[in-house]
Length: 262
Length: 262
Image (cartoon, rainbow over all chains, first blue to last red; front, top):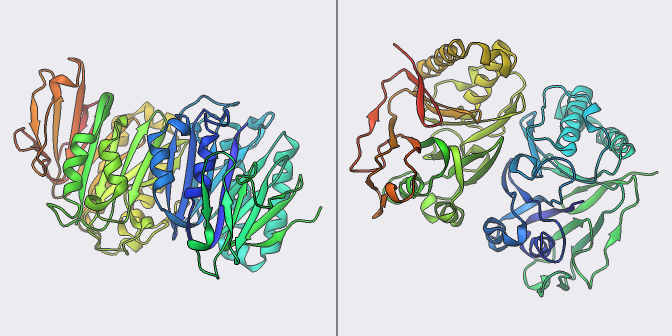
């Protein structure tokens, strides 16, 4: 299995604190030694860092945990391989351009018979069930909705449809998902995902996996809203909410704007 | 204008030496202050680093010039913006997946009326003439050749057709290009591109832009073949070959396997 980390914020925010906790689980406090990756959106562009080496040993991961890359949306993943060799093309998050937008996708879980998911123009570069699922999902979205303008006319309909497609992936195994097109962060829970919104009054947070405490009050303004989503809670002294199996939550600028009903 | 750097090698080779020279031109010895990027292929996957800050000041660029990322194909670009704002989505090289391959593209030059190039499924994320040209070229390739298998059946025909499309871009302005699908490195000269093949017996090379000399004899085996392509020669004591305007050269594992006749 793997671990996911996502962030949605209303002001460009760095991921250093959470990423420092996560990367300990890549061969340190956790068994996820088979690579890691992180995507930071910056405007319509993005920065992707990835490595097939364990994050706890990775020079690039050390740089990223130090670099104050500020972003309103970030998605990260550390991998414990089950399907597909340990190499760069099998390292999440996966990225594709569709409609002039960068779509990013990371998956925790395993799908039976992912090869049966039909593809169109998006073809996996690597051999993971996850990338196959991503390519299938993008083709579904393009085929059904045709343009971002059409999605914008009825977003709730789009989100309900997304949940339906995620449910289909969940029916094939385990599909905890984080994905984005740069504006919204989509979190779908199959078995395990937790989230937490930090806003004023900000307090102190203490990492579970490393000896690090941050007083967010010193680094924020009263208007900042930052939501962090992770497979397992990253801090020991804050109240993380567990998502329900089959639940899709859509975050925009750090806030929940859609939560599926079951 | 911008500067390009490419590498094709028969064994995974690091780009540290050449990249160190190039990044000096990004705000140090050269005026290319508007961002930089580099893509390293690793198997079918790739590592991309990019920044909209000048390379000479960039923390990420410093890491990359130190990190021995070893690759058989790399493409890099430092930018002096003429079309499109200075931001991440306008930073070369551009990457798209087609047919399960990662295609990478970098451009030095300027195209008049690039918006007139018709697009299909690949849509620019940013606003550069370069990304528009890349999206147009990919659509041309997909439309004409349909699959990598069909290209493999008559590669010479594919390369002649590629030159024809590059000539079209050149007719719109200046189009010095480096691109790849991970196996071959394509270099097209519109006004200025130089290349150099290093092989046994290896000698010493001295950077033009930084006080750095490397004895490649100490870092190579007698079988290594490494070709470097750059807008301007990066070393002062080696014999770089200038490409002809309108010339396409295809490199495979460090060697020329196709050179267009004019």
